[in-house]
Amino acid sequence: MSNPYTGAVASALRKSQLLLEGEGGPALRQAAVQEGAMVQLWRAYRAFLCELAFQLQLGCEPESASELKERAVARGMACAEAVELLELLGDPGSWLSQLQAAWLQLWKFSGGRSEGNRGGDNLIPLQNLSTAEIPVLNEELLQTWRGALEELVRRQRAHMEEW
Image: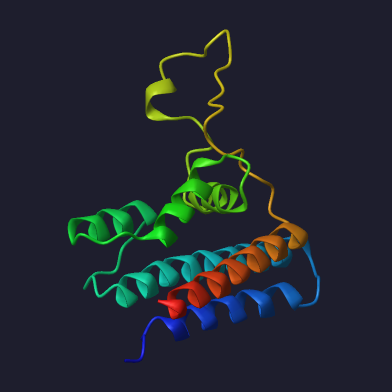
């Protein structure tokens, strides 16, 4: 049985690699290329979640590792791959946690002020130490994330083939 998501994972990883290998240019073009690579990396991650769900015959396209795990558990299955992904996401210093933080930052348009903070400024700034620090995108960091995701996909695919 051919997994329809395997091609999407490979395609998104390859597109992110091609974007990162492009010539440097003006700052705006460089930022656009980096954001484009970021989108392709997140797309590869999401497609990989779907690939895992397909392998487990869950009949869904999970939007998160926790949803993947919940769906597997609901069917009486263990999903070590989802557990590993959740551990990475739970570690603020991990590449996957940083990738997620950067992805979420791409969709924030408010300039950093949340709805609950509009009433006034805090005299003591709050910092949530349990979440990943939002990294500044650069080619080296994106290449690191791409390599880590590619290695994780290869390793987890090999593990799935053993079963």
